Amino acid sequence: MNILAPSILSADFNVLGEQIQTVAKAGAQYIHVDVMDGIFVPSISYGMPVIKSVRKSTDAVFDVHLMITEPVRYIRDFVDSGADIITVHVEACKDIDETIRDIKACGVKAAVAINPETPVDKIMPYLDDIDMALVMSVHPGFGGQKFIPDVLDKVRIIRSYYRDNNMDKDIEIDGGINFDNLPEVLEAGANVIVAGSSVYRGDAAANTKKFLELMR
Ligand code: DX5
Ligand code: ZN
Image (tube, rainbow, N blue to C red):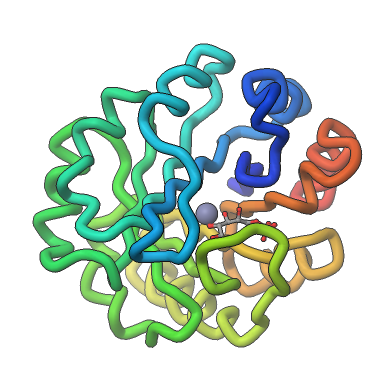
């Protein structure tokens, strides 16, 4: 199933709860929540107190993307704040197996992300264990960047692996997705689509509906 995950990094934080409700009511299945620590990525976004607070605004799935060093330290805190899916970066974990185990032990879905410059081999050993693979299509840290089309080869390789092994798992793509590149992204095999600026720039409800229409 194709799923839209609007990234609230591009939302108006002054009315964040409402901005979440707008896209959820328009049909977005996930809310993509980008957490940045200023170390793994240059920027700092928001953390548990904000997530906990906006959790009350919707029943939509909270897809929490941790762009933080050694996320294993905070898994329980993010689950307690309301995360339904937790994504960690291969580049940010000393022990990925342990981190995946901890996420699953908390009763939420586990996902692993790879940056644009990270070879696909780095994620292959974890594909059986995780619920979702996240392929970054920009360098993480900021919204509104330009899509890097080369990463679609990694999406294709992961999708082939899942297909060959009869695994119907999710592949998420994150960064620079818009109405124009959406078809090629879906074609490559991604089925969870993160979109920040192309949802929240302008009419968020209309943009969400248009995305969902194109993803049917
Ligand atoms: C980038 C974040 C993305 C970002 C996407 O580091 O992981 O989720 O919000 O924003 P757009 O869709 O504007 O590239
Ligand atoms: Zn993200």
